[in-house]
Length: 317
Image (cartoon, rainbow, N blue to C red):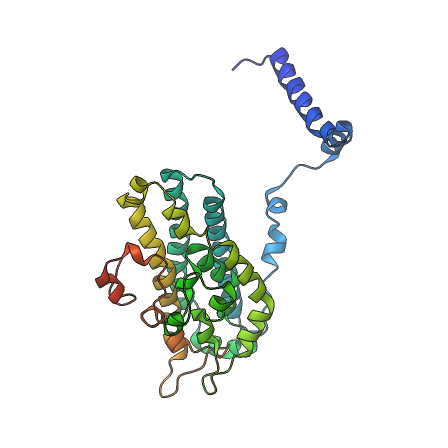
């Protein structure tokens, strides 16, 4: 393409006029901003993503080499959770999401969790068991149970009532106050002391930091979570088979495949005969992790009675 200085000058002048209009509305002097642009350094990849900071965030508590693998993996996991939350937020913020957009956002979350499940197996096989059983003791009372982002994904995915522990679901109704629903969320039963049934320090720490935030989110999501967004779609869109399969995959990924990945790792590292080793946070992982025991289902209306009866047992994707 031949270079045309007059056309280029016109384009530059047009952009300058637009910039001047933008900054003048805010009472700003465009020349000051142009000076800043003139003297600024060129952006680099490592500065843009804060690479040096990112690579310095692995600070082990012990000298065991594999602890860094453990830290890195959980940091990667939280970044995938962040990606999932961004995809859900974009969908829920859309005033009238079309079918294609809805599918795209749900697909994104499914791909993130597909990667998470696969990567968990890599981490499990990539650490020395003896090292893990040693350095894990320095992590007390921290636990992966304390992932607030995972809890937010759940709260943004379905009605809060669906996250109530099965044994306590008859005590509340779908429209019960958020405070009552929150007190009966299923994951609380997984962080009780095995011997006394009291809250573990892990749970006390978690609730002290996030209880108010979770309840605020629960109130915000009461009528705008993913399931409610699905119900607001036109009937024809709701009956789209591809979308229903994507929603089922989403449900299965987050509440079956992901907990099962944790369960397999717990069995590998903690199920030592004749005595089962406790989790670092004192969580009752034998009862908390198996999906067939928790039976948390985001979208029960999209599953058959047989599939619901076999939840966490024989359903495959």
